[in-house]
Length: 84
Image (tube, rainbow, N blue to C red; front, side, top):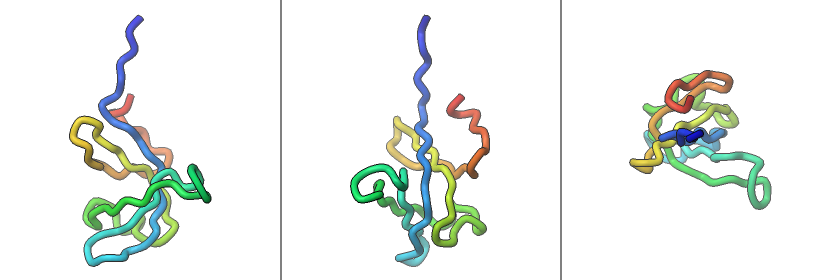
């Protein structure tokens, strides 16, 4: 039996804040890592729906492994056909 590896990874994220014009800083995998950390990434504000841009908003980010880019924002609990 062969297992199909997904082209995408899905990461939980939490908004840290809008620290630069047009960009929103998020914490990927909050609560995982040293000092309750995770990794900080900056995403384009246009990528994130307006109702999810407030600090502490939580959503998932879809990462394309081949291109090395974040490609889509998913609300918590939303299914993602790309990863199934």
